[in-house]
Image (cartoon, rainbow, N blue to C red; front, side, top):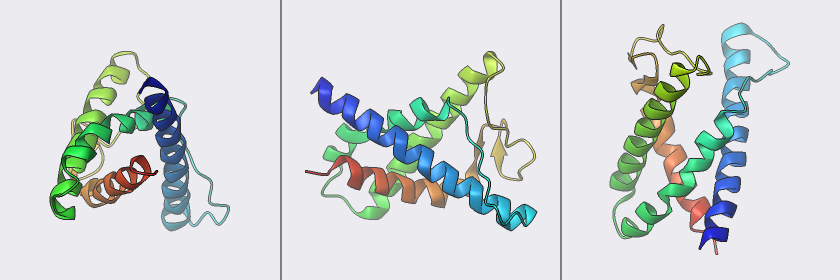
Length: 132
């Protein structure tokens, strides 16, 4: 059980980092016309994404539910994780993101307009964690 959690933690952390690199790379070309697709992330993001391994028991309980419900639950969980980890990191001056300039932000730590992205990420993690 522990080995499975650690493996899932590493897998989720690495996949999260890759998704973030892809996301911020796209942002650089769309927003700044940077054809080099430079991405930006932080080492802190690895354990934050790795904690998606904690979704595994939730995934098992929701396995027979609709994708809309499952994705909604995962989105909520991701928002809670983002808010709590952001608050903790902010206390130490180490929070790598600041959404305070975004229209739909909450305390600069979460962006409600990212809900569709987190919905899809949650379903992606569900598939990742449910692998044989």
